[in-house]
Length: 285
Image (cartoon, rainbow, N blue to C red; front, side):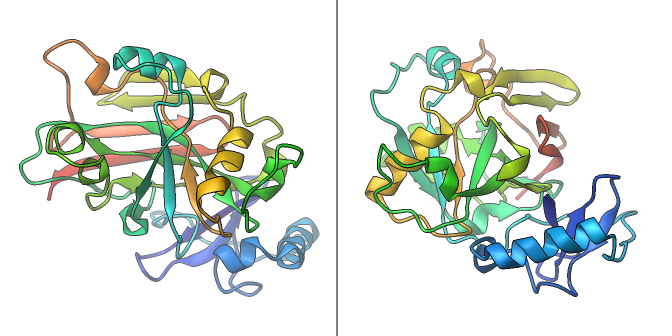
């Protein structure tokens, strides 16, 4: 299923995109798409049954805003330097273990919402990523367990980063990762059953119509299953949590001088195969 939330910010309603591309209203079945829903297999089965029976009312989609596909995200866990080509372009050694950092949940916005260039920023950068959405509480997931069973589904994520704040201002990466609007998510949460192999997805990103990133999750250093297992050793993952799994080569930081960092007025478009497409216009904060 392709689950999404539509409407004004803070007033989104749950919806489903059916196989014919028609937007269907779920508000008669569920109150929202959040961790509680994703953890409830019976609720998801009711949605599937209603969709199959053709009883869900259509929603007008002309001009409707699409919000983040998951409400009340608990935490956003990010994996840095998780593609061989991206590590190489930044001059970093291949990590022996996943690089883990956190983004605040309030950085999450809709897939087509405005992205704000922070005041004083000169190195705002782009990163198309595959996002994992957790569906079951995961703690200390064992090597003999099916780590993907803890995944509710997947989404497109844009891990916007300010490189000067991240790398040149002291401390950890947090300063460059947590500016407002720095994590567009969606348009859809695509349930796990529709993504048989998360290591076979293409990722692309364009800036002002020019292709900048063109990669595949096959290039990840640590697979989706490995990431779930690893992160669960250090923190408990709850339904509705999000894990950004890293970006392939092609970011501004990895390009020749003068590096083409984002500016007000730029347009960024990005997609992951089967998971939908985003488009953001950048404005000054």
